Length: 359
Image (cartoon, rainbow, N blue to C red; front, side, top):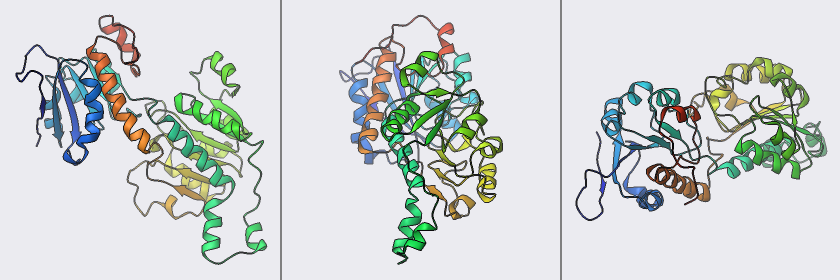
């Protein structure tokens, strides 16, 4: 089922106003977060429009919600090719969140529809979570916590966790060097950690600006790093990118960290690498299946730290994401490009727009 909620100005609907469809999963409680939604509508109200909020639970309901919309705000509702092909009027799809793998962006490009995310709203939080994981692995935090709580407080017990090298001087290998990877790099350097990067799309001037070393292959990054951390979007190029070849290239004392998307690593290969002691451990905020079942072998390993896809979560990021959603929507309705256009190839298929600017 789906419901409509209209925001009107002047009392009467003017058919010339652009129609904005906000699609949300029917499992969400619309009434409990009306204050959060107002963070989005505050910016969106800078432009005259009609807003319809649709609670959807099937592909048919999604199609009905978006087929006549000029702009679609997507709150993690899957938009596949079969849905996007029904979007006859849409200028853009704006996704609430950082990831956009639930949207068939190539299908949108083919239809001349811009796709934007809310990039940057949680970059600092994900970077903090990554550094927290790195330090917890390095200092054996989970194991030490368990020992103390079990009353095991002896020098012999602690020494059993060695080797425990100092963080200073170790090497962090970043797979991907976008907004979040750059935040992680700055924070890591504050601990005296060397940073190396594998990113085939990285511009030379960024390497110079951030004083990092760029490596030519994922395997060379694995071989030279004490920690390998994933910071890439999920797409056809990155699906299963971290696999057996990476894990076998890593040091047996190395740790694997993933705070982006679970499908960017091959989970069976990671489990095998941990069982075979090819690597020392892992810290995961994301899994191939989410929520991951309690029977997942990764959750039964003492050298694996897990969190529930929460790296980007904080009071600030929850607020900022919804604000960014409204700002990007307003830019599109004002005739600008969105600030975070994730399918730049669409520029050749649509009329020229003004550059994005701060609102």
